[in-house]
Image (cartoon, rainbow, N blue to C red; front, side):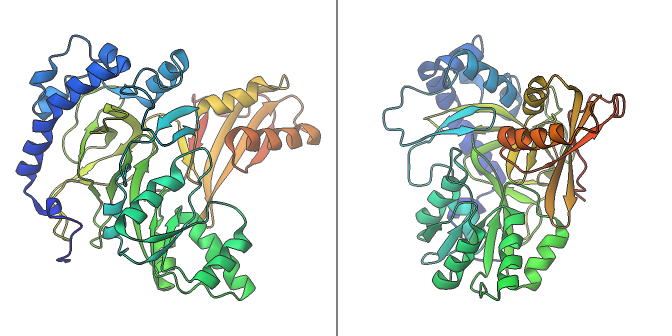
Length: 413
């Protein structure tokens, strides 16, 4: 479909790519174990020199995000997984959990430029970046990618919607980067105010699901919207091309789909947990279990890129859930419960309200009519999760007895 590629690597044969990745892997594993004590402990007893194919890689233990959270608390700040010290590291970030992440070296440390190129961004574009630059690396991930591509970035961040609309009207950016929902917030507010934001012709969104109805609405407004799958730990793992046939795995990543709770790879097409190995020599991550569910699609993309494709984000293997671009963890719900003697049990439900995520905390309490308790819990919910939500007080025994602390009821079909 498209003769233009970011670089020649996107068209190499799958066999050549596989051979090159696994030729690099033993040296990278040895480097990680030699320079990061956390990896030395985690990989102890493994024959790292023999990890030259997928079968051998599958013999290594998975490191899941929940493990990393625990190990970082035991040995702050990085759990021993930083290779060396912070010399040369430009930034350190704090993601919900908290999980601490050092920024790797280079002009595009999270490998975002390739995804932006596939979404139609070009050198010279003015890009409006509405990801947060506060605490987490969200805003920086694609900020670096856009500048590496030769774009100019307006670092809008989140909030101050009216000021952001003014900036779009004056600066006339051609591209938008942010969460799927927030672009609609900007478009709707601009329409209410009679402001001109028609300069935006393309977007790359992440941090949440791009529902088909929302994509159709953007396309009807003349905005071509692509998605990428990224995490704070790993960077941009996969991205859409103009073919819109799943997400193409980024170069320099080894992706596996394993049966949740194990390290065992599943057959092509079967849904499982996404496990990723990247070649980050600042903060190595080897068989890192993201907790996200996906599947590998058969065949190759019609766009001409030859790397494997993911079906996209298909939910969580655990109950940690992304809402409005931010992860909410069952431990955060537990933190709220522990702060109130009046609470017996709580359950956070996530749904779609129109084209936005909506969360509600249902709380079992004998004080189900206490408006003051509801107000205090509403403030606590926002303080702990950094997101707005509603609170519903119910009588003891009203919530389902199914073990769920977070119930994601959004339809990803």
